[in-house]
Image (cartoon, rainbow, N blue to C red):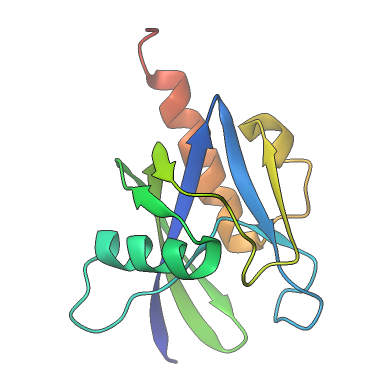
Length: 135
């Protein structure tokens, strides 16, 4: 089975995270996900994330800490998904490849129909936030 290396951004602003909805004609139509995409040959995870966020959202992202990885079979392929925290970006968000974008708290995100591969990444992000010392 083919393995595909993919990056995902947990973009955070003012305590809320960004979810993007798959378009109706896509593989996981209507499901919500973290924005990201395939890692190209000779590209680091961070480089791939910066490129994907520029292509899909029209923003220049500041990639922060690694969050977690998860592996899942989707449509006959193994997707190895790596999530990174994006604490800052420049530019205006534009949904180039998604039908909708929404800001919500991580807890609220659990109430959305999420892409299955993103659920463990959200849970890992929430656990890491809970473990952070208060400012």
